[in-house]
Image (cartoon, rainbow, N blue to C red; front, side):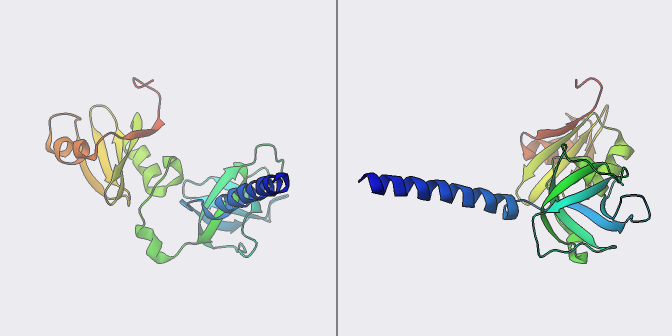
Length: 197
């Protein structure tokens, strides 16, 4: 009986480790879009991933041995920063571990965006500049997500593909009643300075 319990515990620990690794490599959502560019003319730099907002990431580790980065390649990927890692490039915003990665095809241009960081998505970064909101609120919809760029006195509602839906004063207009209110309770994914603090 003791041998059976011991064997079961070892099997359980091994299974947990296997599941954890598979989630880290395959369970990530590749939602960040970037372009691989060659910066080897700069000291200590090589291939960097340039996000749609212009930030550069140094991919120190890629959790997919079969994927090879090439200059000019457009990719969708997930990542986590490696703050303890030091580099000599000095041009990147962060050194990162790429947790998932895939080629970005032309058909992906209309994909629904599910993000927690509006600065990483091109159309959202432009909407932040255009509307100068105090908050960005994300709503779960039946066909994906929607985002409200909430400012004063107006807020601007977009679908997850970057299509403008409507603008609202936040209470007594058609946009609020027909689009924002039916979306339910949203989640704040970004908050700037101002009255919302």
